[in-house]
Image (cartoon, one colour):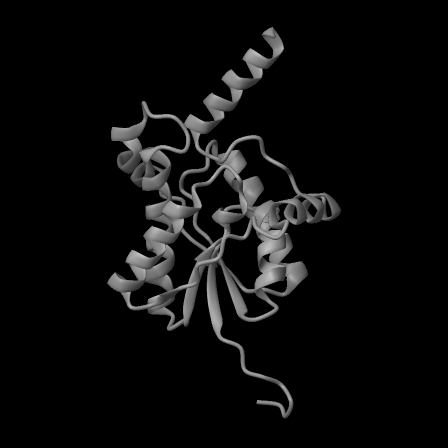
Length: 195
């Protein structure tokens, strides 16, 4: 290690999209050495998945953050979500989705001997941070890798992510990624046009 340089702990950051990750990765770099993990089998359709993945690649290249690309196992995601498909956003359906993605992040962090793990999900005002923290802490206990509990939307984190994603030219999606949230966004738009 170079003299005067402090050693920073590595952290595996589950990243849902470049728009959210833009602020989170820059912020995390202040105290940690991040590795981004793009694991989002919930994203539908596949063209949207590829758009988000390509934007993540561009962001990580720009920030010089290593990127690990997880598998796109959407069938496994559908099997997990099927019992909750009738429920709205911010319900048990979303909690199960957070669980799946955070679990894969914790498993990978453990395998790679990375000190900590976290997720960009908490930068969104549409996500339930309390659930993210509960899941993260449970996985910490189960998997033996520390969870970094930070609500990234605080201190204008969400606002900063919007500004950065505009500066970088990233897409600002109007749905979280899954087919069910896309249908809900479409219905909201229809209602808005009617009123």
